[in-house]
Amino acid sequence: MAARFIATAKPSTPAPPEPVEAVPGTDGIREAVGTDNGIAETIDWLDSYGLQIGSTHLSLWSVAVVVAVILGVMVFARLGSKFSHWTLGKLTRFDETQRLLAEKLISIAVWAFAILVGIDVLGIDLTALAIFSGAFGLALGFGLQKTFGNLLAGIILLMDRSIKPGDVIAVSDMAGRESFGQIRKIGIRAISVTTRDKKEYLIPNENLMINQVENWSYSARDVRVKAPLSVAYETDLERAEELMLIAAKDSPRVLEDPEPRVLLMGFEENGISFEIRFWIVDPEEGISSVRSEVYKRVWRLFRAEGIRIPFPQREISIHNVEQLQGLGSKLPPSGEVG
Image (cartoon, rainbow, N blue to C red; front, side, top):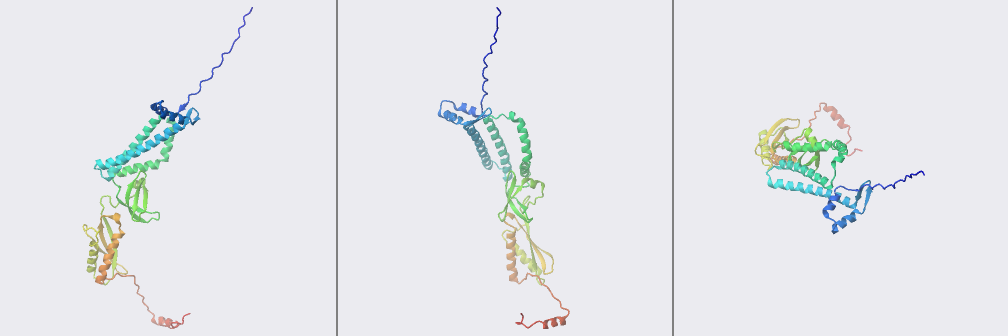
């Protein structure tokens, strides 16, 4: 009797489910909290509401952890920057430029440290993002090229002290009109320059590195002001010069050293041209205001002395008087016009 062998297939075992991964960093916080308290129950309740994206479980708990870490990084970085500002102001003898440069470098270091700590708390594996981070970093580098250029330019300007807060520089508006303003702040991207009419110009740091800058207070704050003036030809020149010097010296903002000077600039069509030159030490308070003050004093002194400031005049010479008389005879008498 032949034996028969019947092959029976073994029942197939179901494949084990794929492990569910939580957002990096949330499991470590859960373990640190424990399991036998109200906080753990709250965490479990938040973790029960979520979505399954592939093998990652995204829940309210994971979102709350990420948001809390981001807020913590921002608060830590801002508090660290403010503390460094207070420390440098109280415990060092740096001047304003050196203190501002130190604050910027410390702020960059604090932000970098806070971001690295936040990445470590979240448990993000940067090696897994090496390819993506390389491509993203390349795109970010091209996109923020100007931003990083302005940042480095601002640091270099503070290091060589060519531009610093409080300096008075010349600026131009969109119409090309030149004015001047005082530097209030040197930021990461641009400097803030405030003019006398309260207009605030934001000039990129890189522009100050590659373009010519007229800095009125780079090596000294003394600025020379010129006030042109004319007198009539019958004027006593020596007396007029004395009065102009008195007017300049009596102005409170005009410096005694270097002393003011009056120069004769030429014999013009309508009068004799002079120029009053004097120095001030506070250009941020305005150039036109001190020039106006000197002009007012000159006007009062000239009127007291009877010195006349000329105005445009024209001399008309008539060679054919007979034709002019004939033209006058043809005009209608007064009151009959029209």
